Image 1: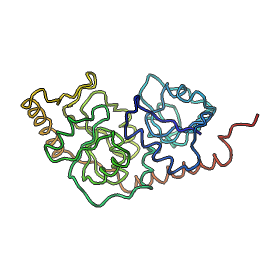
Image 2: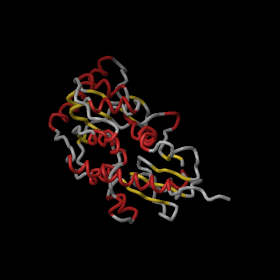
Image 3: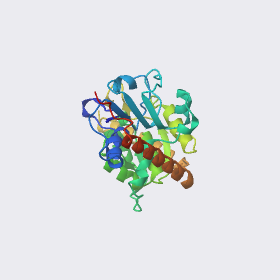
Length: 293
């Protein structure tokens, strides 16, 4: 069975996508390989009209903790799909499926692999969307003594940084998901209109919180692929950093950090474990095994 998840072009890295090989290889040892005749559709906003093509060689597709969104439509859910759980109620509604399939994002299972850290390094840390990450935001965070968490770092480095923070300001959704899983309060932040609110609302509904992001300026223009804080001149660079840093600090100080309840996040984790066991039982029973010819 082949793991299906989004891979950025040219070897670029993104924490939310990279959670897939990191997490599933630990939780499903010996199950995943390069056999594309069956597919395991994991963490990400993957349920859209591109999914059939991404898994075009698959006779059967196991869907676990995935969300609906992006692209331009939703594929018909036929007998090739075995859906164990989805990211949240908006995904089940979009697909016309039973509410019981709305559990939460599969990344929450990280709770069973990582213990929350006691040692805090930063009061606040900012984790931008991977398209907007770079030296600009790093400079801004350093200017006000905030931690900077780059979604392009290794999976282990991001998880460690989140655990060392008291409050995570997250534009990257899986930064918030992992923070919530590790019991680190978080604040949703938006610096660009390209951020997809549907996926955030979907996951937030699954853990009983509201998505009300705080707006601040961006310091990177994804259309031009150039850092707006590139030091054209030392003075202009300093002024831009100062302005962005001031706004981010004000946002942090007036924010109300979010955290799902201990009982609900544990309930969702147990539900994910139960669905994962169902998947393992189906694998053991040969449900995904190709027929002999």
